[in-house]
Length: 319
Image 1 (cartoon, rainbow, N blue to C red):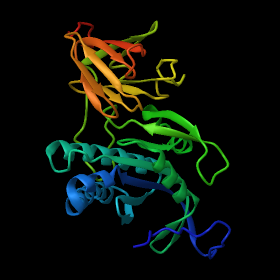
Image 2: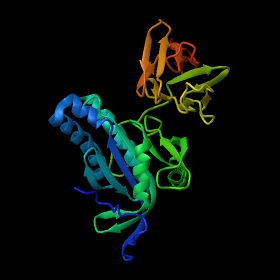
Image 3: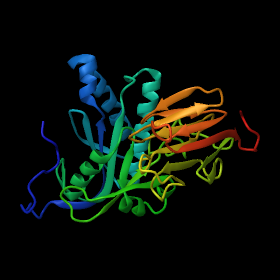
């Protein structure tokens, strides 16, 4: 089945009677669907993909969005604006994570989501234009469990998305001559975002835990006043580590209701050693931090280390 958007070559003119309106455009892909089919077989892999896209579809339909097309391991949706699309994207990720934990989805299911706001053409059920193609290119840049958008989409949200936004790269996307700032929207517990008609069950408090981080003379505290922080080589990170073995955005620390989470999004992974000496490797996944310990940013023994101490927000250590 062909996509319900127009993929005609640039330069070909479309009937001027087509409507052009501003919309939020969202694409969501099931990551490594090929691997799922290899592990589960054709029938099992297809069931896993269909179930994952079903979770996404339910969120979109229950909220303010509309599913335009669903092909293979991808779903294509439109929303009234970029803010609504961002709400829907974060709710989709929460729904996928919840369904995975409850056993309703295969444990390896991960989605990546890209969204942008801009002008689109409408022709019956067809949605087309540069905004659609830009959204496709944004999702192709996303990692598993990421929600990526552009700085223009964040700016258009009149401040609502800014607290969740972090610029991760400035890129030239294929087919465009201008630079695009790709922005990750953190959906893990920083705030409750409720799309119209969708009740979120992930309201998390930030007033119980905090963590102190230190690396190469830098010290930051993550807690009630700052419930998340980024760690990486990029100077925009709250904890900036200038080492080529460290990814531009290597990891995030997020404060949840009952845990401090280290969320690794890096190429080389993180190696976490607690006070008992236990060593855990995490790569593009998340683990809770407890007590105190150190986190090596990569496999090399001499790679930079981040020391951490988890404590109650009042100041007393939990270790």
